[in-house]
Image 1 (cartoon, rainbow, N blue to C red):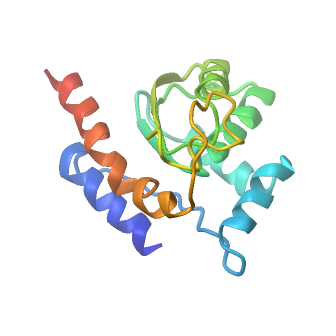
Image 2: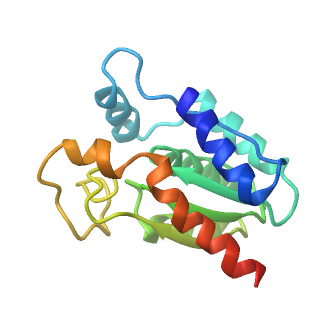
Length: 167
């Protein structure tokens, strides 16, 4: 949660104070193994339904920035909202994503949302591992996880998107 709060503080510097947070913490007991099990299971949980409801409450043109497993969370929320016929006109920036841009684009389109971009570092093992069908790089070492996957490593690119949209 501490890392998530630090990420929010980074975003607030450029996007203003009206920033919310939904945190899907790394597994408590087995870490990334628990995260992978949650991902691969592909079933809907109460958390997914709550995320779908929360997104439904956002104002038009809200920007959502998803990182890591948050990309699967937004994908599942979109799936739920599509099934119940809810349109959620938000804007999505995806970073460090094991979920492919192809899948996220379609899921946002299904709920009338706008997929802005996906930013993945070529050496990020989460973003370019076997879960992301659009991946173009297979990682060599899990030390890359520490060097290339944290949210703050992606933030300069997110800030650039904001700056380009302001000009």
